Image (cartoon, rainbow, N blue to C red; front, side, top):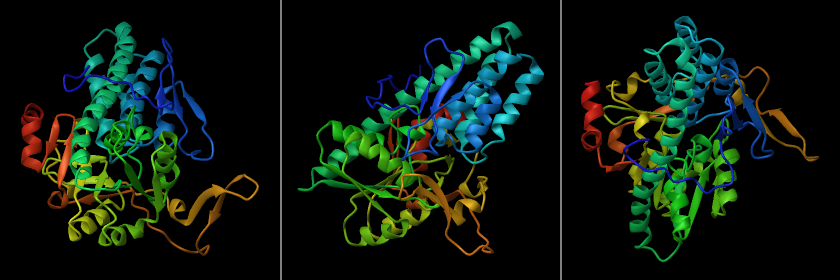
Length: 370
């Protein structure tokens, strides 16, 4: 258990990742099926874990880290040799290049089991993966409490519901519980603070429309879905009180790599004097990465831009093309927001106003990577 927080179970009825008691497999929600169906997928070997991460059955930096850790444990159940450990680590690490949590979790399991005898490795890997899962819930709960303080302050100055804007899905579906950017919102609702969430649809995979809106509905939180390009207008009209986003990797200098479109929101927020906060669990900080421009940006299939999935008139799930057949498309999955546009970083240890304050909050980790 992390020393930074105590685990408090997320009260939601859904879980993105579940390991049944004593099981040597995990069950995950197939997030490609949401919001039209809730479908569970069993992950029982490392290859299935790798496919689930690469094909976005699961997504979100903290969640893919946990799934990667369990994938390594599954691999060691089959073969605990040094060669098998190295192969499984490489297989899982290659699935998504941008989010740092995946490499962090895989390295953590490998370092834990590496010195052990082969006969002890699998059980130790399962224990470590369980710890990563539980710590993620605890970190997000603590992060949420610090973010709640910010929302309480903002709400105290208004006589209407607090309008919070999100981007992509940094909810419980992206983590092992609570979410990152959503944790303060969920806690605000539990505390009786009237809150309304602007959900940005998040092209091209529509994680906001498909996932965040679904989570808000599951928890009974008032929300409105908007197209991504409406964000600036809403801020200019004074209809956004605060923007809270998640992160896939944050560099040592405070630059934030997150879902494509985050940079646009940060620019609009700065131009309209809207606070722009990054919900940042510490495993998402890459202390060895000096600045955001060095972060590898994943480019995904053009089909994600050229086609969309939805429900047909008879209730069937269909994919449709939205452009001429010979249209080319470029599909960067992430962008980088410079630290100068960030109002603050909400972490499990408190809120940091800038990169210097962030390093001070995690001095032992920052110094170790320097």
